[in-house]
Length: 113
Image 1: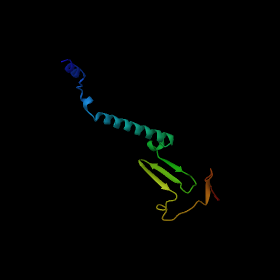
Image 2: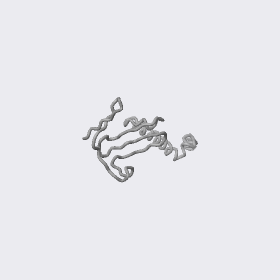
Image 3: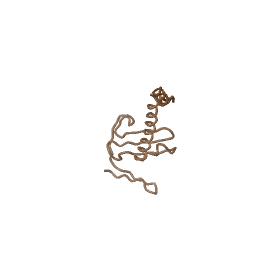
Image 4: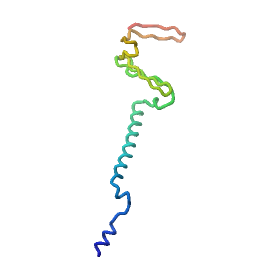
């Protein structure tokens, strides 16, 4: 009779204790929190917080190199243009041949490379 009392005393009646899926749900919640924290860390690390704002912007990656990219955001639309891609340039490729400067009086000066 004594053994029966011990078994009754240590028997769990909670539904959560008997549910084997409860641990998986906790892991899923943890993975969501980890993914959001990782995205926030990457955005702040690479200085791309402009993408999350409501302002329009343009960003140039690798300026003056062959793999230069121009990323523009207007409203909710984000467009990416690669300098080496020929689909938007009418099928032709080009190269940088100089630099143009606009002075305060509106005059433009071109300096070939």
